[in-house]
Length: 41
Image (tube, one colour):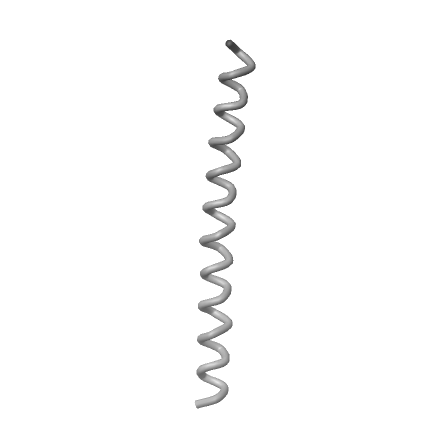
């Protein structure tokens, strides 16, 4: 029972980490695109 709870918490943490890293990647891509746009225009 405790093990099952630990697995649930672990997957929840992994999900949060995946979401945050995805958001971070999106933000970085947006910044890079902004820099490219300002350099080419």
